[in-house]
Amino acid sequence: KELALRIVSDGEGAKKCVLIYLKGAESKKEARKAVNKLSNSLLFKTMLNGEDPNWGRIIASLGASKIEMLTEEIDIYFNNLALVRNGELTSKENEEKVAEIMKKQRYTITIDLNKGKSSYYCYTCDIGHKYIEINADYRT
Image (cartoon, rainbow, N blue to C red; front, side, top):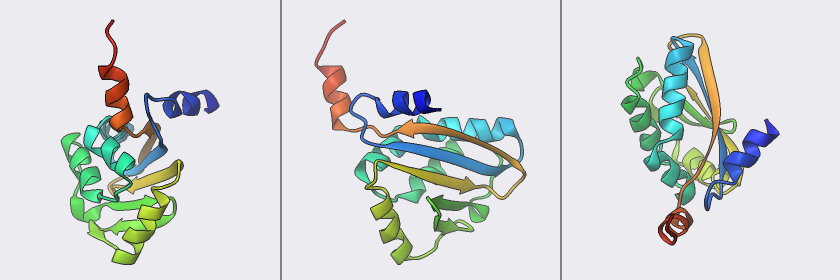
């Protein structure tokens, strides 16, 4: 686990290492598919870098995974703070608190699809300007 964290944290220009934990999926396959889509989404990764709790990007990436889900059943937590319940923002106050959580180098995003009993998790990192600088400034 520590090696995995080090690899993710060492992403080119990465500032954040985030655990994505998805639960309540109908199957392990669906949970893995959703987490992989989310963890590789450039919109999601730039959201992490910008420290903006734009939960619509999370929902959009999950939708792009084409798993079985209903937006109005989804809950999203940052650490243990509920940002979204039943597909709706819990409060502006919680949104502001989540923005503070997102300033940390490490935190957890938990997504509950409320459809079944399967879960999956992975670590991912953010992506920002430094990634572009590193990868645009050299030739192979």
